[in-house]
Image 1 (spheres, rainbow, N blue to C red):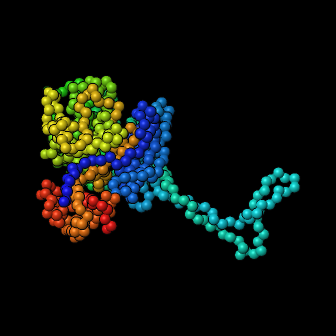
Image 2 (cartoon, rainbow, N blue to C red):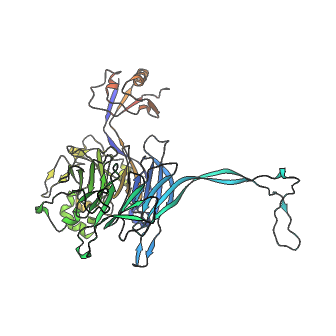
Image 3 (cartoon, rainbow, N blue to C red):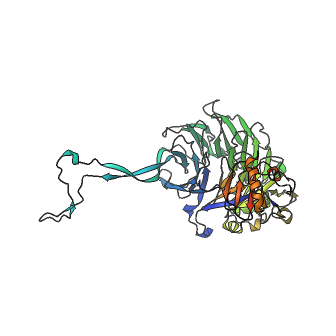
Length: 551
């Protein structure tokens, strides 16, 4: 008898780097402050508050998306501004990879004041294999305290001389600073972004945005300046900036007023006059003391095709169409359950937390963080109202909880529920096993555990999450069908799988034979009439045997 089991799509924890001790025992310098995949997804960079940059390399021996340690180097050191009597922290604010042109990697790292361009490459260590020194020891001379030392041998002719020869001893990964871009920002740098032309990048602080050439470290051009003549008239600051992924003349920057401005460098040298402004009008009835604080945009990103803009403020995530400035195409509630408790978050400074937000590689999903070490994934499709809640916490790792789509649980200001059943409720978790849920009870939220920094693999559904001093890797497992069949049916099944038009070559696995993808369960029904009708498209087909077959 053939048995079939359908598997739901799930997000699963893959691996974790860093000390997994208690939060109270963590050293401040070990807290991760940024995480970033490179353009290929084969390398991952993290920066911490101690000024260190750690690189991880994809482990090609693993079938899932897993990484191994590559190298670590000290990017920034603590400094002191004697003119202003200010300490400059070594904390790494941002890391951005430059597109790879040769065997070396180039990446930008920045703290509050200084940006550095690093070259990371494999270096061969060589040693001298031959020389002309005799291995015999000569006795110390009379009356001298010299110890025995190698002596020069007596050569009868020049043919006995040996030329020194270098041989390979070891290969190490080296990191050297190629450029240092300093003394250009009076305020704290919050963003850096590499242009699609591969030659320039921008750096943004609270009031200005500068344009740099990667090859010129002592000169930059100021392209945005919102500093008023009188600082008492200051009403907003720049919170984030990014280049367009395809058009090298376009860039955008977000402000503490909740606006996103798109600028074109072809129009003028100083881009104070924006080309487009994305802003949603506030409902006057909902205005409060905290309105300006919660409307401040903490992060802004372009989709990989440049068509959409993703922004994050304290309570929501918004997706904008670059051709529609007046209103976002989708607004996702993140912290709506905290709206009645904004006074508490203001008192403990949590309301000023700067959560990042990212697009998936194909733009079909977005991801952002929350408290209790929760992070959420949402579809970018405006018509789909679901969320996947995951937790980057060792308790969740041990419980082997999984993330699956559930209806979004949004609470309106008057306290009524919107959408479907709450994530984690009996209705939502029926038949799904141990599923994550987002904590909506403000009294149960740990504001010290928060996911601020994250990155999404550019081509795969794999993500890197920074949680305090840990980096965890998560991988999406698509829907699958697992078929269990008697051994005598295996040969027919394998023959069909190899010849089936919708199948790709299978790979051996300790559980049996596992093809990497199919388009539907029709491939299974083709050789087994006892299987039930197909319930929908399938991405992975697993076949396990009652007893391992030699194939």
